[in-house]
Structures are given as C-alpha cells and as structure tokens.
Image (cartoon, rainbow, N blue to C red; front, top):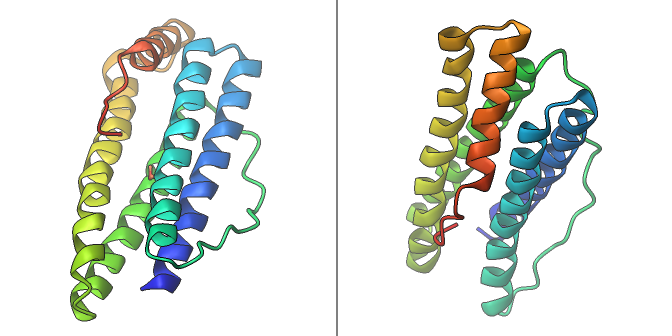
Length: 165
Ligand code: FEO
C-alpha cells in the first residue's frame, strides 16, 4: 500500500508540473483565461499530492518525494491541450481505483476511507475536461470560438474555490 501511495505522489506531482507547463503555453499563445485556469489546476494537483504526503507522514511513514520527468511544453491547439489533460486524469483515475482495490485486499480500512475523497475528485476532474472538450463541438474551432472558450476557462478560474479541494 505504501508503494502505491508513493507512486500516487509521483502522479499528482507530475500532473501539477504538467498543468504548469500547459499554463505557460496558454499564456505565451495568448489564451490568458486558459492560462489562469491551468495555473489554478496546477496548484490543485499540488494540494492533492500534499494530502498523500501528510497522510503518510501522520502514520509515521516518511513520504517519498520523487524527481519528476519534464512535461510536454507545446501543443497543437487548445483542444489538443485539453485532450491531453483529460487523458492524464483518466490514467490518474485508474491508479486511484487500483489503490482502492489494494486497500480492500489488504483490509487497510483507514486508507480505503482516505481514498474515497480521491475517487470522488476524479469523477469531478474528468467531467470538467469532458465538458470543456464538448465546447469545441458546440461553439466551434475558429478564432472567435476559441476566444469564447478561453473566456469560459477564465470564468472557471475565477469561480470561488471549492473548500473540499
Ligand atoms: Fe489529482 Fe487531477 O488528479
């Protein structure tokens, strides 16, 4: 179980780095709303990582802080970037579900309950990116449409932060 939780620290830290790189690409490309959104998303992933770090440390296990591979730095389009974000969330979801199964198998009830928050959070994260991707079909892919989508991301980035996150 400890090994899986350490591995999850790698995934959350990688997601944080990857969203930071996405924010940079958006900012330089001129998508300011999307940049704000992904800077916020990067911070969120760091809080996910810290939840696991504190959980392990509170149990007297020292969390392993890993080296992180450099993320992608460029994208074909905003849509391509959001597709990459969704794929990354889908693989995080798989890893969380695999951990839940390990917790069940090892009868580790504390970790099982601890992971419940992550299971719910992944449903929320995947829905968020799926909904954003739908906007490209609904609004379009020309410059004006992408500008509208950037505004939607800007509004999401300035929405009050969910205290549960
Ligand atoms: Fe913490 Fe978006 O997975």
